[in-house]
Length: 162
Image 1 (tube, rainbow, N blue to C red):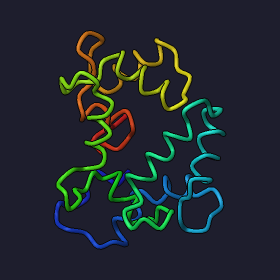
Image 2 (image 1 turned 30 degrees about the horizontal axis):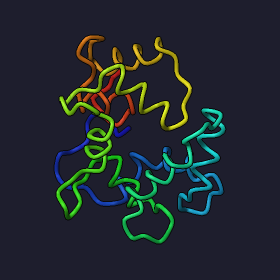
Image 3 (image 1 turned 135 degrees about the vertical axis):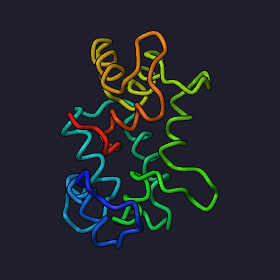
Image 4 (image 1 turned 30 degrees about the vertical axis):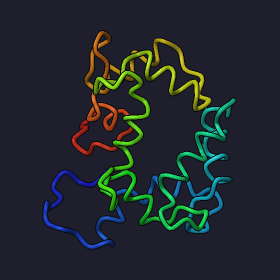
């Protein structure tokens, strides 16, 4: 995450690059400067042990992030996704992900929404882990978690001080 004292004025690519470069480098398994489907598959298999539906999830991630459609996610594309920068169509990628996860369209991710999405993505999580995600995101177990809470869970909200 960027230091808490960053300016609200537009920044150059080089200063913004330092914010998310470590996350990008972790996903770029073969260190070729771009993220491929193989890189993502290696990462998620190592972290979560893979699972059924994982390839569909990775394909969806690539579709959202690979804006120039060359089959790879370069750093600038990665940064646009994680910062929620709006595309020419006016839809932030993270907002789109949230809307897909929010099955009932109420603007909150319930326990059921999160569990369903994690299962679909091939991640084996317990009910207790889902509850912990909701609490970490600032939500409650009855109402769920908001879009801002999802960003906090994913550590994309730089106001997190934990």
